[in-house]
Every structure is written in structure tokens, then in C-alpha cells.
Image 1: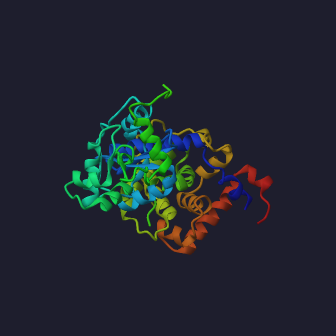
Image 2 (image 1 turned 60 degrees about the horizontal axis):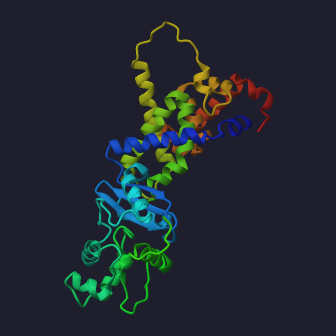
Amino acid sequence: MNLTADHFASPADAVTLERLRQRLERAAEAESLLDVAYTTVDSPLGPLLLAATPRGLVRVAYDIEDHDRVLDALAQRLSPRVLRAPQRLDAAARELEEYFGGRRRGFDLPLDLSLSTGFRQLVQRHLPEIGYGQTRSYGQVAQLVGNPKAARAVGTACATNPLPVVVPCHRVLPADGTPGRYVGGTPAKVALLTLERPEREGAPA
Amino acid sequence: MKQPFEKVVATHADTVLRVCRVLLGAHDAEDAWSETFLAALRAYPDLPDTANTEAWLVTIAHRKAIDVLRARKRLPAPVERIPEAPTALGVPGGNDADLWEAVTALPEKQRQAVAYHYVAGLPYAEIARILGGSTDAARRAAADGIRNLRKSYRGAATEGAPS
């Protein structure tokens, strides 16, 4: 079958396919079919996956979380209508870049916390009250949300924060003074706390 | 488990575009591709997890291509004899204008059967479901299509080793 095997097998060129993919991305947004838009941005802590629903930013994921697995989970939990569509993430990408550059101390983005429920979501809603450069213990956060005995549950809420960096779970530490565990790995947590330290010395401009 | 739609696009974009090109030619193929994937995105949450995603996409492309052909027929013909335009078919990805010209000359059923079997790689039972009719009829249409292509396509005469 020379005719078929040789002649129908040549793939379309990558430029054409990318142009069609972008056309699909625009059409999907226009028809309100873009349930989850995502993109990947570079950061000092490695590539970050950003995902947003029409309601707001829904997920920030570190490389060590495995972006493919995170996207699979979003398809399961939210909607399989998941497309790479950087435009919806433009504001989030810009604010993160400013934050990592030391030019931004808080995020002004619509958030979609629907990946969390109950107490975990309650904690995540309160975390932005811990200001830039400050830290709290798990027990203090438990008090903040009106449930002083729930320090362990606060730990779980921080560990399952779907929006690390933007929802600052890195500002919550164990009472023993160690940095504690972090979804992006302990070195990432230390790097964020160092970035936010007000007396940063000799930090590159 | 249903994968993110982005992966469906990444996996099948190329095959669906080549199917659309065989059905419609390069120019209309891009519109059909876009309509196909937008319709697929809309219906994707309801697609059973066990479904053959490629066959599902080709089925949608089949319907969209028919829509495009119908719309073409509704357009008033500006001249009595429509000039042949093989280059419109052969340009992007088709470095072989002769082949595309030969494909254009096929009857619609043969053209569809060739696209679904030789480009998309679907089994004849699946193609019969898309075209209506029996599995044997689908096999015959594809075989007739290939035979006609061999007859009319110049390159095949020199290269066509017996299979």
C-alpha cells in the first residue's frame, strides 16, 4: 500500500496546528466553554502552573507537584474542559512577577476557592490577613479562625492550599521555629520568607 | 478517567486536520477542524470514559464536513464551468498536488472511506457506523477509492509496488 502509507501519513505543520489551537482557544472563551484555562510561568522557584475558572484563579502549582497530574486532577474535580489559554492568566502572571521581583506585597486577584471545602476553605480565606513579611504559628491561625484547638487541622488546610504564594500559607510556621513543611518543598518556603523579610540585605535589585 | 481537553487536542489535532483535508481540501479543512473541536469541547463532559476518542472526533468531523459541503452548494455558482483549482488542495502539508487532485475526483463515499480508514486508521465497522450501511460496504468503498486513486494518480504508477 505504497500510495496510502506514504502519502496520507505526512503530518500537518506545527505552525498551522498552533494557529488552529489558538483559534479554538478564542472560540472556546467566546462561547463560554473554557471552564479551566491554564498556563505555565517561570519563577525563581521554578515553573509555576496557573489555572483559572471564569470566577477566578483556582490553582497555583509548583513543578514538584507534577503539572500533568495537577491538570488531570482539575479535569476530574472541576471540568474536563481544560485548555491552555494564557490570556485569562495575564493578571495573575503579572502580579506574581511583581511579587517575586519585590515590587508587590499583596495580590489583587479574583480567587476561586472551590477546590477546598469546609474548615480548609475557611482557613484559606483567612490566610491573606497575615501580612507580607509576617508569620503566624498554626495555633495562632487556629485562634484567628475562631477554633483555637484546631492547630492540626490548620496544618492540613495549609498543606492542601490550592493557591500557594497567592494565598500565603508559607507565612504559617510550626511553634518550634523551624520552617516546617510546604507544598512546594521546604526550600521554597524558606525562599519566600527570605524574599519577604523587611531587612533584606544586599538583595539584588 | 477523563483527561484534560488540551490533551485531546494535542493527541488528535493532526489526524483530524488531515481527515478534513481529504474530505474538503486545505482551505475549508481549517474551518471544519475548528468547528469539530469546538463541538467536541462542548460535548466532551458527556463523552463516556470508555469511548474511542478518535472515532468520536472523526464522527463529528464527518458531520461538520457535510455542513461545509452543503453550505458550498448553497452558494450561487458565479460561472457555468467552475475552474479546477488543484493548488488550493495541495498547498499546506500537501506537497503532492497530484494526489490531492486525484482525491478531489473521488465520489464522496469513497473519499470519506479513504479518509477514515487510511488517514484516521479507523476499523471498517466504525466507518460503517459513521457512513451508515454495512461493514462490507465501507470496506468496498475504501478499496474502490484506493483503486481509483491508483488509476488517476500519476505517482502511484511508478511507485505502486503490489501489496
